[in-house]
Image (cartoon, rainbow, N blue to C red; front, side, top):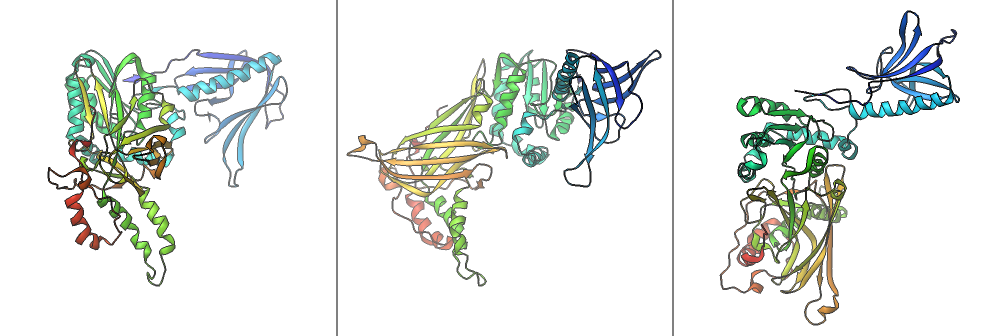
Length: 555
């Protein structure tokens, strides 16, 4: 299937009073014309000499690629005003051996009949050039336009290259497909809501292997456009071709949703744009851009809404594990070298990594809160910086080691509303959960209020810098004054997590234990891992935990 871009005007021309070559001493030629045209090869600007026998090109430039048909190599056209009715047009070639020095291939001087015609030509040149770059001349299935997209402007090239390389490999697609919670929930959400797909046009944003496109086709979609920017698009074509009954209603388009063009609007969009903490990889922005470009008004989006859940946690095991990583830098005689000057930086460096693992929900010490992102209405710019106020009431007295986070998404179908959750205690997904660990824990009592803020700031490596502040407010007499007793903060890079892929620890306790007995509040000295394993961890395994009803998942 081939997709074509429309054009408002196929040709526009301007009469010239004269035209002459810069490199020639010949008499300027009269009866010339500058002609913009839209053809199968692209948008072109031709300077032609007119005579009784016809028109002949003086030279020609493709405005989409600025490729001169006369000069060899890549050439870019520049126009300089010499006067009210006179301009010089120069094709700029590749750089010479000297730094920052460019070679100029050739040029012509053009003279208009009037100043008004000269101004009109300048305006037309900018418009045609803009249209050529923004649109390209022809988009086939699997080809993107020549413009520098919004994605390229905000994302570092090296990050994008690694990102698309990663998702272009079958082994990583298999990892996601074998997340049966993820894949099974998507399948159920689509099939249980056939009414939303049957006879409808569907766009699959970031189609990957094409599995969601195939689900949509199974649900009776009229046609599915599977947009995928990585090399996985080629595998998706093969997979879809191998399922011809479904594949005849699926078109794979290789390119970014910011760049590609579709022949029609979509009634419904489907995608899996979620990363760690919902927003990592910044694909939600592409999902929103695709919504604005391709979705009909009031069209459906699967998923429809996302929520980031947060709760304070206490985990002495994890805190000691992270802190002990920096013990290496406390050596004063490492092959005769004192490493201690770097201990502080190493200590903070380990605590700047968010921890990705599956943890026991009994480690949570207060009911969770959540922040909602409505994919149907959120603006792309609103995802550049996300500020979430924090406010909890502690259920137990303990040391708070940081903030635990997870997410869920809603498929708001016409028939069935289905949630996909990554909550602790729920079946584990490939997203796991995420914890931000404070280098300075907070001491709290049951009933004490914990406040703060989680601020996420997007960066060009397709992720976010996280700024977390947590404070313990005065408890008991004088609490109404709202005084802050303790504050702890940290800065983390969501792009560089610590993957701690261990199963949740078994925390044993007697059912009749009171909450204050569950989590010790005393200081824990930092020791070597062997020392911790021989004594401290045995004690913690008997005492650490929180009542199982502390985690509230609102689904």
